[in-house]
Figure: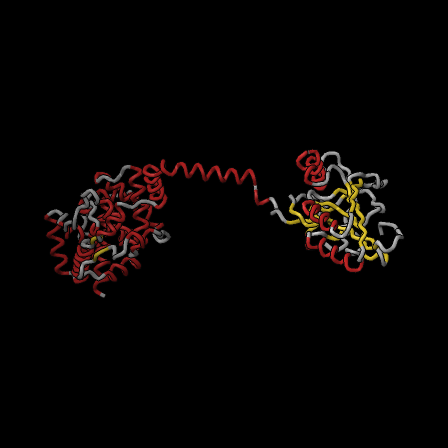
Length: 151
Length: 331
């Protein structure tokens, strides 16, 4: 199994942050506000480059707990259309169930590893765990996610 | 350490098989363990079901990874700028382009604001027509009370009257609005003796004094150096017809009653008494009018009461020449 894509372009960090917060909240406005915060944080620390992917994860994880309380006033003025384009065969309700009922560490591991395409080593370094733990969480998370697809 | 290495020596169980499914799917197991896994999964329905779940979950994650950002969101995040930074940038741009042109207007505005702040015109009341009160210049009739600062007024030889309405600079002085005047208003005869500030009426008297010293002024009007009164007398033949004409003329010239009695008061059946104030400029016209009835003579007498500038006070007695009796002049 290979990762979907590698966020190695110049604006990869922008897309990574936006998708990370979107799949963590399924709210475009909250994800927009949190992305602004995280990107500002990364910019001030000089971690926007792709060589700092593990640090991206640190910053994204830091802002994730505050995701629900963030609302950007600039959201309506800046984005007047849907912020994310979903594939037609993607049932986002499955992910919503997984997000609501799944183990948070497994959800985050699946998100970082399979959806955002981070390597296990980057995730392990960013989250402060071993790569084996990352693979364990991803494996269990994928099995649980598949369980939601059955229902 | 690879989980497969940890369990290399362990016998493959259902739990262990399910935990190694992700490694098995990724090809992370050695050939021996992979063969064992394949054989175990073939004989275990639970492991087969878990393996199917894993593959479905992975397929879903791959589809989810196809989510893309819209261009608007991407640009909004890339080019995001806080509102205060936008305003600051806009102001900087404006000031660099048009700031110097606006500099004179800014300086002018600031100057006007500073002037307003210093002058405080809103703290000054608007000028209004006021009635200047006649006031005694001498304070010989004022007796200071034993305690307190307010002097006690004493009886005045002349009735207290109000002068005509003139425009004057409003000051906190004993002045009365025109609407509050009455035919015989009670003029404050109290003069507060203050060495520093003088009441405006006194100032007006001083101004009149200055005008009296001017030769040009003295040639056109009676002298106004001090308080004075013009006292005159005229004898007429047809008394009953003449005194009303004189009264009407005085009124038409702007004369106003300046005593307690009405204009042309018949003190006696053959004497009419006029005590009035009239504009100084009308004095000559009045005198020429009276001359048409007979010889008239006005004497200027000193009087403690100072009239407002431009006003003179006249006491005129019209007598019937058919009678020769005399009577006291003032009521």
